[in-house]
Image 1 (cartoon, rainbow, N blue to C red):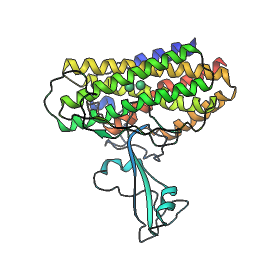
Image 2 (cartoon, rainbow, N blue to C red; image 1 turned 30 degrees about the vertical axis):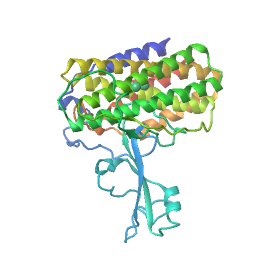
Image 3 (cartoon, rainbow, N blue to C red; image 1 turned 45 degrees about the horizontal axis):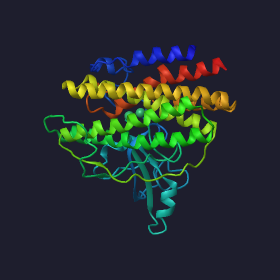
Image 4 (tube, protein in one colour; image 1 turned 90 degrees about the horizontal axis):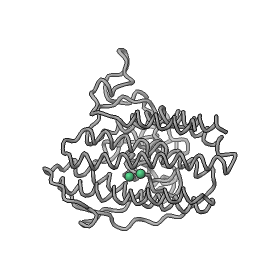
Length: 357
Ligand SMILES: [Fe+2]
Ligand SMILES: [Fe+2]
């Protein structure tokens, strides 16, 4: 009961945003501290940090001078690299990919390969394991996913942003289908399965609404064929870790981000759509806590695994300085929102689960 009250209080407190002024949002700043919007701590990019929307790989030639530090498995490769044209913004989210480097060296002896991603808490990620890259359907020209008839002034940047978010929401439909299979495999109670089905239906509506928003800004598209993924491993511990990352943290941050976007748009129809999505994402985060509560009773090892995961999150979610909220949410602000949800909800929530046990 305490856990429920704690989460509700924190969630309600967090989901009450305005379109934040700069001074409020730069909450980590101090008179002597950093003054730009750059992360206070660069923070090692890891696949775990943020559920991502777009992701991919690129390879470059090994630098002529041996880097310091070099990648552990391939010391002649730097741990990061300059991304190719069009990916300039992913600099903080590049990590060395030893597997791809090894494969590529069969045909290119100097190759150093890297994985990149753009943080995007817009939907529950669809991926094979918690460490895998999230999968999205390719975008194709089609009109049937753009529901509604919004009228907005064309804006290419906003259209691209909302199309990205719509694609993430579309993949979340599959993420909840995957979650259904995992819960069934673990013998979950019917109440949880009902809520997961409702959440999957929510995600279809989110995808349609956001593709409609993208279309209203001038970009009409929809999903192509989504890759089918296998479920590699199902256990209470594995599902608990995924649920903490993708649901409690990821969808909690998604609720906050969409809510902030809603506060930053003037059009009342758009505001209403975004506020409704934020409320749904809040419910999805609540559902994740209910799943965790059940998993704690299923397997005594779940609690210690959650504790360890919580410690890892504390290390890997760096405190950041961030620009204010905007309809198109800057990456640093997405990170900031994630950190806020972690501090206000995830860490005390896991602590309360441990206290209840
Ligand atoms: Fe969603
Ligand atoms: Fe969601």
